[in-house]
Length: 167
Image (tube, rainbow, N blue to C red; front, side, top):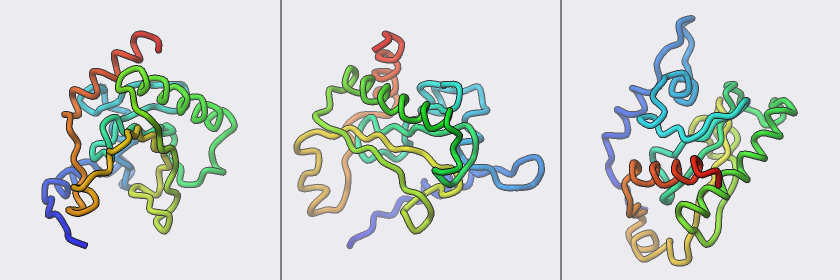
């Protein structure tokens, strides 16, 4: 497999992992959700127990994540209220993405634990990834590079409009 050098990501990771006031590490999700910069931080929606944020390094346009406010690693540690809101929010995400981007399918899932592929293993989150026929093309198959054809800010505005319309 070839690798694409992306040094700008290390800056993002180091800047988004500040220390909590008590000296322990804080997940990027915990930091971003407590800031009052939803558009800048790509936060689309806030519920009672969870929020929806766009993935800064998306697999596809509109790659969303449903994240509990509480920083927990294990699915079974979610409260019943959190579990219900996670499930309902996945439904909302699918509706919003259908309205905003007209995908032809979806991948929905979690990577739990480091061995399960979790990039932020101590703060579980659900990925909702819109898919289109042919979105895996020669660039992905031959070049092992994923092309994202739209700026995050443009996709954010489209999805936010669908949310605001009550879709």
